[in-house]
Length: 235
Image (cartoon, rainbow, N blue to C red; front, side, top):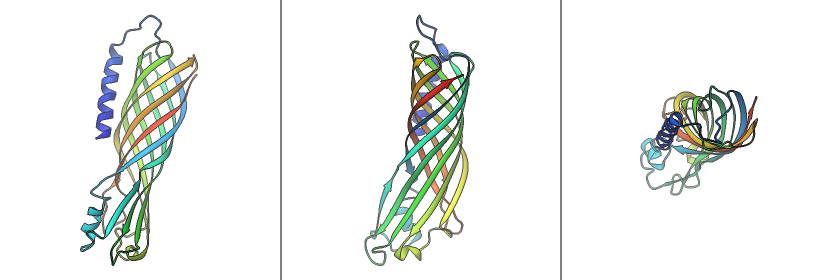
């Protein structure tokens, strides 16, 4: 849902940019290449059908009411990007984003699962290519939006203890998956000088992973959003 909202907002912003006029004192991005780096936080939403007490109960009959869940959705994110401005309003931008680690943990509360734990750690990263639309507000301030696609990679490791070492959800303690998906983002940029700027943005990078299985190693599914701030340098 977050990714749909972000893409809708991004499309609206790009639509506005296409009709923007070069107002007095306003100046969009200079034609030519640019690059940048940013850092911030990621937020992982684990898909309920794969990660939840209810999902676990489907695999292990009789466990209902005996397992609780907890999550640590936030991770450290950083992004490097390179783009080319075709004019004041339009650019093409590619990026690599490291999204850090997030965890989902199950804890047994009643026998036979008492004192047993199952910790899933997801490590995510993403390559993206997007069209960037810019709406110049002033000579030093832009609003922009990104719409494009991603190539998302997730690696999942399992750390079971107690009874959960016997009741295996997957046949392996680790799995990885690559998949493509759509992405959207919105942001602002402040340009104190001609050749560099400060950029803050939100991005929804779409879906990661694949549905769990009891017969082969799978990663489970999730979606990841990021909030980033960094610097842009123009050549």
